[in-house]
Length: 188
Image (cartoon, rainbow, N blue to C red; front, side, top):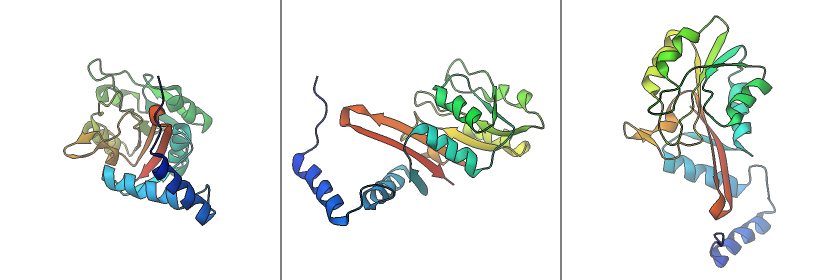
């Protein structure tokens, strides 16, 4: 099987832009262009491209100055939990809904303690979490919500991008066939 190869002329035009600007990394013009195009396509306001999905989650936790406990799901890629632990946040696992495989909102409230600062739900396999129920729980207990939206590219909820849910969403998607890795954080 052969991998995807872009049109050589189009690819070369991007390389030419890089050489012309002299800006290879660190928020260069092509990075900003991709951020703008993704934000427009997804219907979100603020996207920051980052190196990987773990970094996206860590930026979210640090931006919100999270400490203490975060209620999350055990049914996720290891980065959801390891990024919490790396930042000194204790993960508290809530059960999942057998139908959607997402965190079960009915299991969240019983796990909330005075040390709980956040809920970190994961939209699993393109199935959006019950964002309304999670938002109500978070509001009632003054908790922050950070979604791990690695599987939620272009997922809609009430005709709007589900990536607009919570305070911050992190997204990571390897497009291996196209040779592209896209990781970003969406700030509200």
